[in-house]
Image: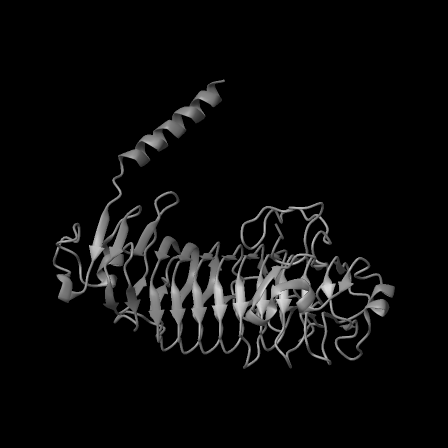
Length: 432
């Protein structure tokens, strides 16, 4: 009993101490709008002028509101605290453009979070347009619990949103397009990434690229416990790179994503640089409609460089369509891939259980024990208007009520709860 009261008293003390801290709001405006770093920054009439001064000055729990204008970027080397994050945010209704690196940036990226001596933690960046970076638009390195949300990142020379050794990032509700490499790149053994509700399009390589990369230490070469959900990913991969590339990514969830008109593969689970082939992942309720002359909808090849092959992946309730006559719905490296499950999908009549060396039919694929409840169908029978990229299920679609119940898939891409009918629908949308 004494221990119980001691815990209660300790918690009460913590709450009182937290309550005594005052979270402040500061303002940044261009010099033309009155911004000056010699101002106190505490009011809209006396704002600071530079983003760098703002991020260097605020305390945990404080918020920076940035007024409409064009700014150079910044490098954040300090941290917030749990329950007292630091926030830098575009003012409501504002248009904040960051179109060049700041004078203290070290990687030629427009916005950088990194400190060579300590992990940078507990920041939120919200609502910025980040354009024309000579390298990465937003660059997170050796960070923990950083949120990037509501940003529009485009025309970076390399990747739009980049992370390295970044743990617990939340990357949500961003647009990242027309970048020279990837839309979003999670790299270097950073675990627990949550990548949700993003619109990723017209990137030269992957929409989302994830790479454990065993070459770079510290780290185990595996990205673990990721959530990749509710993203719309289109027109990526003209230079190679899947809609979702997963190199050494394991024990993760990929669900309710819409991928269409991507030019390489749809979702790839593999290892070239990662320590193991992407394993024990759940690929559930995605809709993948490939561009002509593209590769496989789901691609699980043999690992390179002597890495262990992918094992234990589950592919269920997905629509996997490609118009290609030489590629198909699912490729695995071997008919005996350990722990592999695939079922309740809508597919085309082409598969490979030999890493692409031989194409087999759905009937032959079923003889291996896969996709026993899956069906073949075409876009015009499945979707409301595939010609105009409306991939909601039409009335009478064979995907309606044709799926299996999956724990953790509680709603669809539109937020509609599952199931609406007698069973789960297949694909990223649940019909009402």
